[in-house]
Image (cartoon, rainbow, N blue to C red; front, side, top):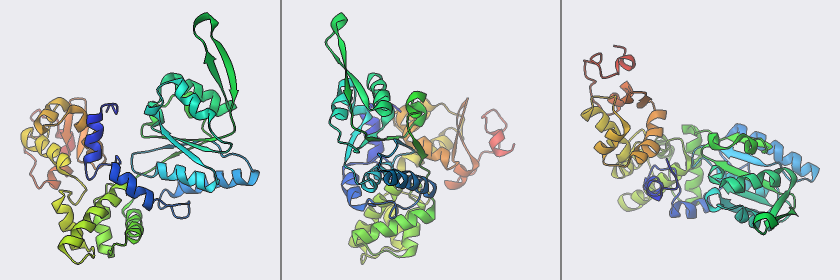
Length: 357
């Protein structure tokens, strides 16, 4: 997906089960975010490792090492960056890779940092190459060279920087060049959450939002949250609305299921787009293989939207497989939609391996 394409980014943000934050999410997340590592739920290994890094830095009276956080959207990278600043009792500056398109943009930010300040750089893999190369020296030597003038008369003026901590976040760690990755003192990969962890997130958020919820209601929402706390909190808010309008305000399993049925989020967390992709693949193309462009036309969406917005979750859930010949439905996809696979799996449609034919 080309995230510079605002149409695709907006499509991801508008989905109820999309992990990209919209304006409402950003406002609510500010109130729901944990303030320290003790409040942060999940990511046990990352929390333990990060706690050691921060406690050691505080004991030395030094600035914490640069931190790289990678993982899918909505797993808590921004929250952890704010916790790092809070644990180090330091201010935080927040920006993003797409906002830094020139080396001068980065130089202006770096030169205004205070000693010990945390600079959070979201989507760091989307930063421009000139700014990226300037960042190498800033991270390693706390110095940047500012170019004054043009052509043969241009001169480089070294600018000393106060020690700072860079926290980089990326959803695509593979796009980071090795020289940049190597300059981070601590690297952590954020994993998807399990149902039990999501239930804890939902109970905590419900308490902060003053929403009544029982364990069965939390379990129902957690099961449809695609392993992502941001989605869990978003679904909780929509179920809250339903419970307040259609019931007595208490979220139970029955209320949660009924509410999410209204919003077309099924028991596995699939929404209209996800099911549309599967239904086209199964009903129109017999389970595949079918090319991505053809599948996108059948669904009425852009190719990039199908590939980057719908497919990752379908593949992770084992409902769809990407093959050299095209997209292929798995037996779990047929079962989820309550359909029977065609018997002629060995007649050239490429699914004989998946169905054991």
